[in-house]
Image 1 (cartoon, rainbow, N blue to C red):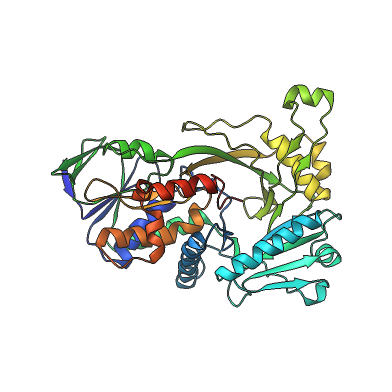
Image 2 (tube, helix red, strand yellow):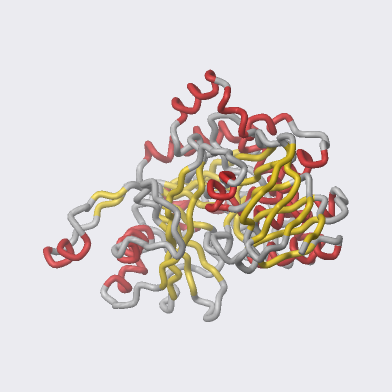
Length: 446
């Protein structure tokens, strides 16, 4: 069986659905076919924490401008859809017990403010601070609020009392990624796109240009434009074009945990404890969980409305080893235990859970990363082939902007000046390679 398409998009995760939406609904490309062997939004796009932020400390303003544009588009979608994606502006809250770390947070905030984040407001009394509402995003402040000592403890009394202070980033929060993906797909289909449940198994080229996409079912799609939006399967699909991309994988987990004791307020922002933490394992626990007692900072907690209305997402990335992609993934058996103990250090009312047997449900997905943790968006060396991927740790918040950008590449539209920093061809520049080595792989990662 043979079909035809103006563009074939490989992947129905959030990156692929955003690309299809911008191609069909915004750029009015006639026939877009989305191909995925799994149901939409069912691999890694629905496994994250579904947060967003315009907090991008550097090394320059490239990622800040890119993700800020994507947040603009998220807000447009929220207005257009009646906020079906449940976008809120609760913010990201970075907390610390270390005065030096609080000073570093303030200095970093002023640098991001210079990029365009908004003002940094300093509070030594809670009376001057405006809390974020639980729902909605309109008419809220931008920038960040720095609360010292007693002001921080008064505003967030459920966090550890030894807090030196907190930084509350305001153009940030969370949403329903699944709802966003469903809306993007519905709008794409309404503008002529088609979803096909199948696997891309071959790509034919003629004269160095894409001419046909073959599916595992035997269907062949005649097309001269092909977009890879395959998430962690990006390297496998690129090899069908004899293209090797500079990406690797990290496995990132989270725990969905029922907070029956209401240790965390249901209207809390995205909570992050910046300080390294020490865990005192007993002798028996060391046999089960190993001898590691000192862990890096970065415990995360956020409320999420699921079946019971008392769930939390608990996250702590204390391992960033490179992993081979496999599905379903296998998680560290000690993860839930470690993350719960870390959360109890940040929020003491969670400590009673440590003695209980429940550890919630662990799931997660892969970060498909470039060496400097910036995305790959743009044309590949094969004519008519494009990529939108390596959205490592920022897929949901950046997908709208990435979809807009790759669609502009596909139709030959006007590109923003930051587009060049996401091109796969950037690695051909030796001076850029040297910059990447200086930045290190954790650029942009919380």
